[in-house]
Length: 271
Length: 339
Image 1 (tube, rainbow over the protein chains, first blue to last red):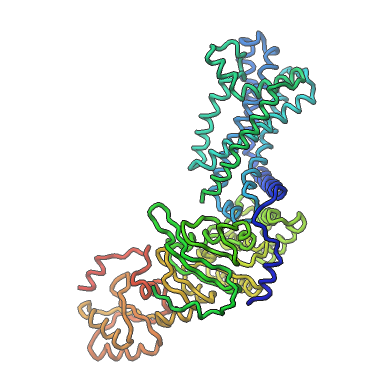
Image 2 (cartoon, rainbow over the protein chains, first blue to last red):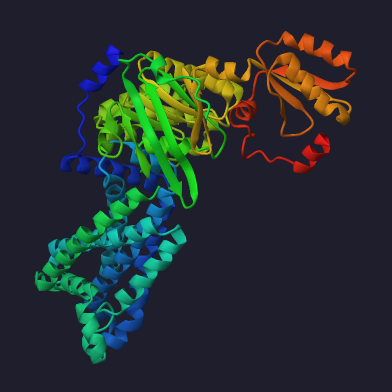
């Protein structure tokens, strides 16, 4: 018997379970990896840089006069709306990138390491929050330049921004699930757009709900995007936290509780 | 099934690094691995030899907890791969056929991230990465992105990444495939050094020479089954130390020549897949003199004759009775000859 070797193995602290703390540490390391990758290829930030600028300009000047009489009165309506739309659209990229990443050999190594199974996914999702932060900051900044002065004050605007980022992170689990399940990156993009397009437009993002037909109002009112937008408007425009704020966070948590385990399971099953 | 050794040949109290029994993995209607048994003693190099598609990689992936077996069981240092996968992962290092490192990052960033994931602190991870880069001669390239790395450098980095946690068992899936001879020899040196430090290595290869050079024991695997197992010497003894290749001028003499070869060497001969050549294992290269005399006595004219080390193809011919599967045989050519 090889004494030195058996000694070496029994010296190791072997555990078949990973603690929550280890899962957190592993996820943060994976997030660090994601940030390094972004730093190496900064061109992948083009979309989150230009989309908020162009969309904010475009929609405000197109719809402003028609919906609120003038552009200035429309800003408190459209800025929170466009913010939610931009950031959530950005989260689709998570699924696409995850798919591309998983097709590379390095994910085999992650699977063979004694790390928390959730870490490669959670870490990737965490790194992407830098994209949400950029989109959020730029949207508010554009609004400010165009004359938007939220009554809630800077503190509430920051809270509103953080809430959108947190909710988008939760929603991105849905797109990661598509990312893990789909055959390739292109189909992830396709499926995700198909889900997101009706969801963001059939909401109160652009127009007051009262102007819609009754049957549509019914959907718009239960649409989680509407609640999120209302929560942001309440916070930014009047500094108030209402029922919409709670329901948005509860909804986001429910998404994570459902999608995180099935995504990790699907990820483990994929060879 | 040609089981050259029996397990009793091994020390009874030997600690097993790998014990696999009846491993099966089915993809669709393809039984990629069809009942593989492997026993690897701790502190040794074990070679799994076989052609492309024989089931080598699938077997390793099951042992490394990357794939769930459809049937059978496997234990790594006594820990079941299905029931205690997280423990098994703490005992193994895996270096895949394709480098499993991050292309967009630099060598040092890759190693630091793996080190951090394995629980090392920021400083320790950096220190370990530096050590390994030094050891594998990658210090100069440490900060360059991997995109510009050669195949050999990538493999070395990949192996370095598997060694961060100093695992007692290392899986190497075709560590030298596609490497030039010099880099291959460096890789062999590294593998030998690892075992000296007490690691156990299970490597797969397509080359008999590599298995022979490195492995203490070899399993020959074909179509998802272990068709032979033993030490390199035992395996070679079964197919002869060297291999005779003979081409004659007149195809009409073919069968006659074959009979003479079998008589003189006292073994079964084969027809090479390329056709037209008689191949036969030889225990002793000197016997070729007897053979030449015998051939001249009956007036058979030779076109070509060589005595070589046995190739994997010949091991396969001898053990399984068919050639390496993915080598396309040309039936018309063979027909012509055997007429």
